[in-house]
Amino acid sequence: MSQSSSTFSHQPNYVPTMTLAMAQQRAKFIGDIRQFFTSRQVLEVQTPLLSQAGNTDTFLQSVAAHVTYQDRPRTYYLHTSPEFAMKRLLASWQVPIYQICPVFRDNEIGVRHNIEFTMLEWYQPNYSLDDMAGELNELLTALYGHPMVMSHYRYVDAFMDFVGIHPLTASLSALQAVAEDRGLIGFDFNDADDSEANRRQNWLDLLFSHAVEPNLGHDLPTLIIEYPPATAALAKTALDKEGNTIAKRFELYINGIEIANAYDELADGPALRARFEQDNQLRHRHGLPKMPIDEHLIAASDDLIPCSGIAVGVDRLLMVITGAKTLEEVIAFPSGQA
Image (cartoon, rainbow, N blue to C red; front, side, top):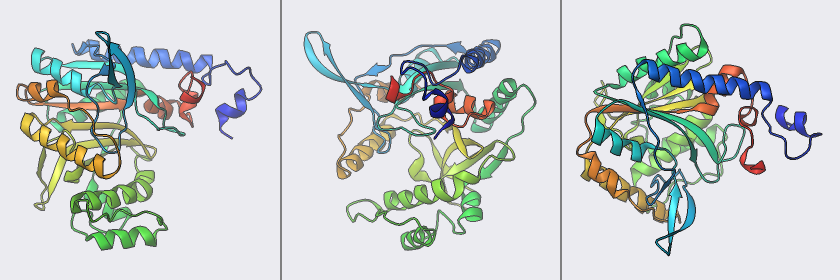
């Protein structure tokens, strides 16, 4: 039984899972984030939670909302991230922006997951990924209250250290064999109708989540850099020092928990459209509904100046800073009690 459920099992069913003391810590925590960006003249913005477009990512399921617009029924979607709308602002205004807002991802419930959670997202014009990593380090220093040091760990190196196989060059059969050797059975990612890149990435994701992630960020907050190209999403791609194509993005891990995800943002409307259409094809093969593509984002992308952006899970970061064991301890009402 989790700490929160045992603590509150004798309480009336209306009580929050978060204590008053944690609520006070959370309020200060969010205030400190705002002060951090205010001191750097980063503009706080607010974008709609509802959108006519949805996230095409196969593994992020949008929450649909049935609305009436101009007397006609329409399906909108609660955003999985404010990314699309914020990029439209960035293309228009070309100034640093940030947002703290609720985001929604269907069917995500667990110790570290909730359908609704809080995200901090910010964009910096003319920032490289190294610049963004530096600013993330400054934010962590401000929130922890003492100087922080982050380690940088290539995805390839982490995979080889904890799995023992090169993730970008290993064959599909080798990846599957390693997974089965580690007891990861009952998975079948070898659909002949799927592309080899997608099949490879499914095995890589499985191995990374089970064999690599739990080991990350225990001594120092750790940035995993140079991800496989199939994970690029809205990030640029490049060549690593061995000549392999990689995604220009990083993720932050603390105590084995994914905290943040950053991109060197792709500003290419046709390329983004091709990625979204490919996502929808993959969704169709997996029996998932195709998602409406955000035409506003496509139009804005060609006017997007060079920039990097990052999304931070506010609840998860508060968990690791306070030592909480579950998300329930740092939010008032999880989805099951909302």
